[in-house]
Every structure is written in C-alpha cells, then in structure tokens.
Length: 440
Image (cartoon, rainbow, N blue to C red):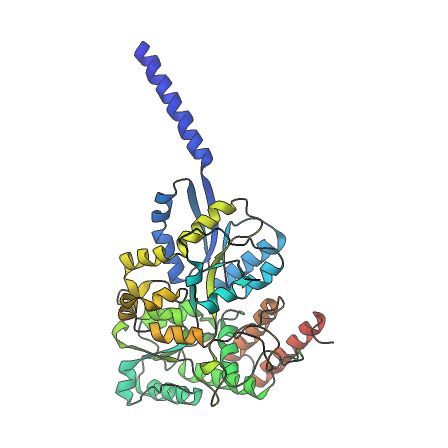
C-alpha cells in the first residue's frame, strides 16, 4: 500500500510539472504566403521548436491576394489574430509610420544586421530602425528555355527589349504546338498583375503618377506597354491567362509549357531544381526587358522582400522576435543548404550569401539576381513623387492598384479593349487621388 501511495504521489508530481511546462508554452500564430520558400520554411521548423520547446507554431498559409487582405484588415483594426505577419516592402514603412509594427531591436548578438543587403535593409526600416526582417528578396528577370531558343535559331541578347521578346514569342509559338511563347502575370491584384505591369510601363518611361500626382494611365508609355502586353498574352500566352499569377506560371514553366517568363528572380531556384522542374537543365536568365533605349533602373527592375514582422497587437513579442531571428539568420540559410542544397536557399537578403563560393557555384542565377536587386532604385525623384517601382508606397495604392488590376485583367480576357481599360483606370485613379487629397 505504501508503494501504491508513493506511485500515486509521483504521478501527481509529474502531472503538476507537466502542467507547468504546458502553461509556460507559447503558441505563435504566423500568417504567411503560399510561395515555395515559405512552404519550405514550414517543413524545417522542427529544428526551431526542438531548440525552443517553449514555443509552438501555428501556421496560417494563404494565397497572396488573400494574405494581403487578411493581414491588412487585422493590423488596421488591431484584431490581434497574428503574432507574426509575412509582409513586404510596401507595407513596412507605412505600417511603421502608423505604429502598427514593433521594432526588431533584439534579434541577437549573432544576427549580423549589417550583413543585410543595404537596399533591402533600407526598404524595411524607418528612421534607421528595422521593422521587418527579410526572409527572401527579389527583383525581376527574364527566364527562358535555352533549348527552344537554340532550336529556333534565336539568341537572347544581354539586354532584351520588349520588341525582341514579342518576336521571339511569336517564332517559338508558331514552331511548337505544345508550348506557349510567353507566360506573364494576368491575375488581378496590386501585387500580382499590377506588379508586372508597373514594371513594364516603367520600362517604357511611364510611372503611376507624375510630379503633381496626376495618374498616368493614358500616357504613351502605359498605352504602349498594355497594348503589347495584351497582344502577347492573347496571341502567344496560355488560355485563361487572366487567372494566372506567380504560382500558376511557375507550374506552367516547370511543366515545359512556357518558352519565356518575366517575373520575380526568386523563381530561378525553382525552375532549375530537377525535383520540381521538367526543364531544369534548359533554363537561361536575362534582365527584365526594356521598352525604350536606356530605360530607367537599367532594366526597369522591381524590388520586393517577403519579410516577417510583429504587429503591435501581439502579446508574444519576445517569442515572435526569437522565431524571426532564427528564420532570417545566416544559420537558417545553412540549414536549407544542408537539407535542400545551396541553390535552394532563400535569395536576395544577405551580402555574405553572394560572397559564398558554394552558393555561387550552385546557383547560375546568383549574379543576375544580385545585379537586378542592386540596380532597383526605388527612391522618389524628378520623374515620380513616390517611393517604389512596381508600386507606389502610399496607403491608397493597395486599393487603387487592385481596382485597376481588375480592369487590366478584363483587357487580357477580352471583355474590354485596351483603350477602354486605360480610360477606366485613369478615371478610377483620378477619383481616388482627388478624394485622398493628392490632387487639389
């Protein structure tokens, strides 16, 4: 009987101890995008939880447009649904200004914030304080099938123009019944088709607004860009292109269905991964095309970083910063390299990665990616009053860009003509910018 009592007492003590551990655990709810690098991170986070058994992770993985809607609504209302949000270079300065984000000032002694690529660090900071840590960063590039170009007798120039791209798409489409000459973003959204079209219009010397904040959708640059875009998508692109965003085009390219794809540099590691891509050995890289000679930013690049930030509404800031430090560290890059190979580490965030010979040897796209990021000048200037390239870093752009993106998708689907679409976009933009007080 004495042993029975002793056994029960031991069980009770164990239960109390276990309850103490359970009560000490914190669960972080993380909102993230369904891109390949973020999915890969989720598969590796057992490494984090084994190091931090007091922190558990609850992932909310969403399609890009849905993610933006959910996190914007939550943070603007102080909803507190998330402890960590995956956001980009557009949101960070605006949300930091509104005091919606907590500063990341305790990432640890070995984090080496000075190793972050200056353009990316600057885009995620306000008053020299980091408010989001970059998980991966990107600019824009041209990805193309070297085998199809060789078969057609076409050579990709060092600095392609849109006229060259359109002609190459035509030739390859005519020679291959089962391959689309070009795949481009058509899915509406300020970060989907408008990211692409904003960069393409800029390659023709056009911006969203002039120095007086007047919208420019009926300008020569936008008219030329959208006309050529719709023509290429209609004649040489896949059916249903108005529904295709980054992930849909990535799937098509990896299946060998696209001869060319102009999109984010982050796609390069996926299209060259033989476990994911059927054409991994036949992919070449070139700058994002120019529309005019000496187009701005040496190729009209864009700049973006999917980054991790802590909303001010989170009650678990210390644990959240611990996870962010782990997920965006040099050690995390080494973890991915160990498990997936150096070519698959998240690109574009750290200077040291582009000094790592193992990475450079494994990633044929490394130099092109770094050049595109370094050439992407987002600053305001004489030609535009706003910060940003593929977006305008003002609060109103999110709603405006999405509304105009719907109109551009209508041109791709054929339900509206280009002139009609641009007129509607101009009217929408003038109305919203007047209402917001930019146009007096």
